[in-house]
Image (cartoon, rainbow, N blue to C red; front, top):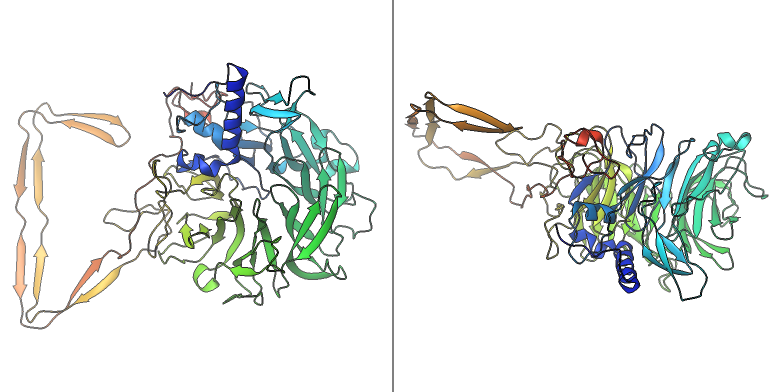
Length: 620
């Protein structure tokens, strides 16, 4: 095994390595996309939903009720997966990639309470009065702790925080009375263990929090009266909470619900959907439109803008990290520059930068069209400048015969459509916060050929062979007729029983001859007689070695060929594969095997041949 940079030694080395790791975690698309597995299944067992809220860095939080940490858990709790820690654990990182020593666990349980925690959003670690030198894991045993270095000698001590936001019943933090039975917003500092109750509503539900990158702001929606403002009972409004000063502010006041808020990296720009006429009377129009707010974090004042005014609902906005692009789905038929839209199928749209000087108001571009893409929804934006926009569609734009809800990514810089999956069902929403070449989703598709049940959470590195100096990753389909790696194309051998592939055949009519010829071929018959001493040894599943003993003989009967000639005209029909290139090579690296030996990575006890998966995610 290669040597990794140590996390011990003189302070300059420690600080340098810490800064390198932080840079790596802050920009995974520039490094980990060349080092990660093509596809990795994070969960198994019962179905798991993909979180709607955005998270940051190489962190992917999710909800599960399994005992993933071997601590006896049976409740719905929040866990998180860290791509950097996982790649370090797998040993797939480059020699120049700094990894913690000892390694940090890549799968951690973050909550330990009642109340069914849900809808997590996770920020990156942040140092106050100093700089981070080590990123911890956030696990209870604190075996992989956070560390920071003060700004200068004699300055105030530095502290580290990493905020997790989620909603849960009030009982999660021991509440009693009316607030206990309603969902509240909570925050947990993974570095210190502090748990903070942001809301305590008694007449409604507070849900779906989303953090900015460093966790200084939390946006969420609530139907409760959290402040002494006159808003309709039971109508969802958007709020913002300032973490450091413990300040809560209401941002919308409409008579129709405002929901699905998403924030950019700094937190000064958000997008959301609302059926209320927020810039007018506030009345409930019954049709969702996309709005955005420029929020001044210093003066704590919002500037509200409306992006769409369609005759059908526009929903599920997503905003880029830095450059203020917004993508959303819509079934409106009268949006500017829309083409071929229908009221029964949603299309994906993207805006020009919201904060650009021109054009104002921002212009829209339609990315999908119902006649080719079918019904499309729940876009995500990966990258600072919306380099990649992912979405889920039911159509067949690449005409490769696949059906159902599948994952796609549009690369704006090259105008390339990439189909990630070809079978199973992708359950929206989807995610791209791990980097522009990473795609997270909940799907019934078994990407690596293992037996899964229900909807499982996956991370896909779809870099393919687009760049140099790395093993091939997941190769998305980009050409007409091409298939993604999870679909086996038609062949003489039986295909997967769960494939949704319809298949494609070209029947070519060739010029006929004056005298047709019909040829009947009889397969060669081979008879083998095993002699004395023949032995057969089975090495494993599907592996058999046979040693032939003395006297073994093989008799081969020649093929019989019958040719008949007639004097009539005829044509010949042949079958040939599609002319487009089809990628059939499976990923070179797969998820954890069904039975792993000692010392190999695991998630559940059943992953290990020994039946024991240690707390460090290694088979005993």
